[in-house]
Image (cartoon, rainbow, N blue to C red; front, side, top):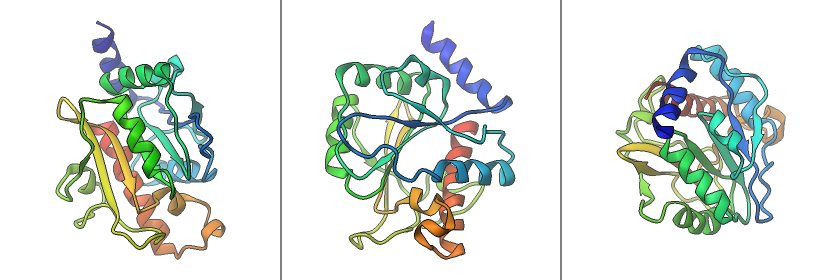
Length: 212
């Protein structure tokens, strides 16, 4: 009954003012990295894909019951990540009930987050998402899949996912650094076309959550 109620709640988000959140996790990693990114993504989505997201994102902890209030929870940083048993149980319930976690490696999270994802969902593999997936199709087309925003190690950008009952519940974006592209222009001095590309990909993610 709880799962059914939450699915009804999530489906109702698309019809009212929405709110998204940033995950405040433990372990010493800088969960607060890219402080202007989500605000800029919200503004872009509200102006271009007709969302009605509240301008300022919330901050939520993994073990909080408030987690279930947000259809999209964003996670970023450069370092260590630790989910307690309570964190993992609450996140697992959130994801299994229709929630969505987007982890954007800001450079340096990879070795830590992969370990914690196995703790979170031990029966579900982290799989690379093909460019044919719906998240890359609309409202903006990304025929090659996740775009490259910042170089870092020069590796190819990849989008990984964890699927629950066929639904994409966790998106892990690696070697792309979308959040840097969402930041204010003077933070990284990215060209307009690079920032626009990052924001369009972010809009696809938001669109996917609210329409699937």
